[in-house]
Image 1: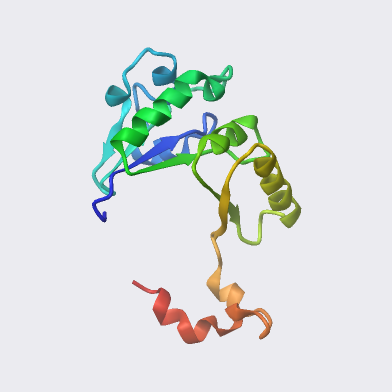
Image 2: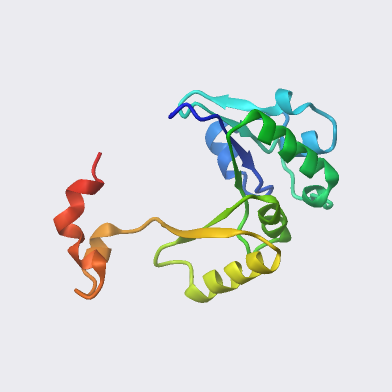
Length: 172
């Protein structure tokens, strides 16, 4: 929306979250590009709402056979770096499959996202450790699905206790 050219790579072969949201019926995507069956320009999908691009996952793809660690993945990322200012890669959970660790090691930076009040802190700890051991540059941790009302009921020693005073700041 700011005029920066952005592409989102759906790197979660099993759940295809970004693809399902933007282009659920994609005919070609990341796997076909990596296998050399389709040019990246033919697989990219423009999202009118965000003004960004998506490299989807087409069809049911569960076996990567090391596609993400292949030279083709490195070539694809280099090509996308020349076309876009920002490349985002949506990966599966870091502890679930090796795909996340492989893709994270190729990224300039990793933002680790955990679900508030749901993801166990030990899982976060282990996930961050797994990413770090793969050579990933972890630049931050974000919490998703934060219940601000529930958070506001916490201890006065927590900054969230004062959330009510600042709730107007969070509204659009």
